[in-house]
Length: 189
Image (cartoon, rainbow, N blue to C red):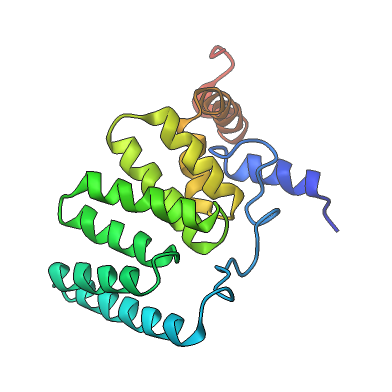
């Protein structure tokens, strides 16, 4: 049976773009959920139904209707993070980046930075920050989302870490030399 260290070494060999010791799934939280027990069950059902309608509207291309459904859900349960996260995505699709960032801030705040919605909101905000060339802020969000279990966020955090990128390039070159010695020859340092 392989140890965690063995898996980390194998992960580094076969996926040199991940930092050493970063084994996908090793510390991943399984079944990441939001804690909705604090909400009235009837209101929660109403809000979830509105969110389902909002997602369906967005998927069919009716973004104004989606925005309205998510806003209605927020009016019913303004303390629940999920509708803010969904509305943020809709706002982003409508070109309202500032509104999207405001909703993401609210989603992260209401979730306490934990749970499924927090993970999604952190990834979404990280992407928006990256588009705004705020790479350090984006990296922080991706690292937080990675700690909650997002493999996508973990990969994005590595891409934004200049030291990890340098180490990974060097390790990748060494691995490629070992795999293909005839291509690199002995004269290539």
